[in-house]
Amino acid sequence: MLVQIKKTKGNEDRLTLLSQNALQDLRSYYKTWKPKEYLFEGHKGGKYSGQSVVKVVKTVAHKAKIRITVTPHMLRHSFATHVLKAGVDLRQIQVLLGHSSSETTEIYTHVATTTFKKIKNPLDS
Image 1 (cartoon, rainbow, N blue to C red):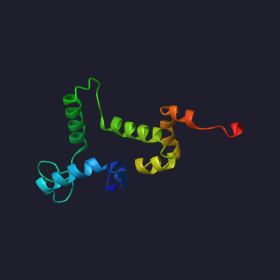
Image 2 (cartoon, rainbow, N blue to C red; image 1 turned 90 degrees about the horizontal axis):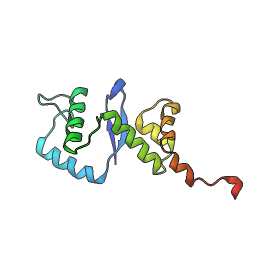
Image 3 (cartoon, rainbow, N blue to C red; image 1 turned 135 degrees about the horizontal axis):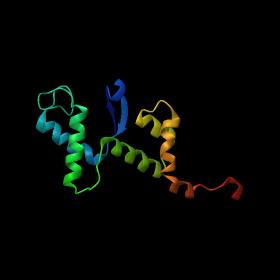
Image 4 (cartoon, one colour; image 1 turned 45 degrees about the vertical axis):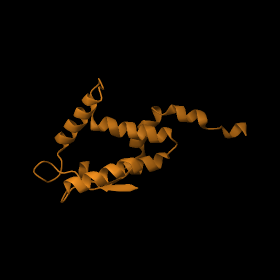
């Protein structure tokens, strides 16, 4: 249930998680649209532009009646925060986000301080 995304920002290849729920939707989408080169293609074929991705995210946020400006980066940040809160190791999150430095990933630790409450201090054992 891993998806490889090729040539992302910085021309990097990345891995991300695929949910069972999304898999069913992707199968249906694939059968309907029959993409040729990219899973998600623009109207004229070829890969989606960054601007198109932003437009899709903003449109969906508007339909969901979210009153703040939502960006693709906010979704990425939310994903990282949620998996960290769920107990996923910081190193694994670093790989999923494609960060070359663990320091970049560590910015999420200040957001997820609630997970620290579950850690038992060794001196208390």
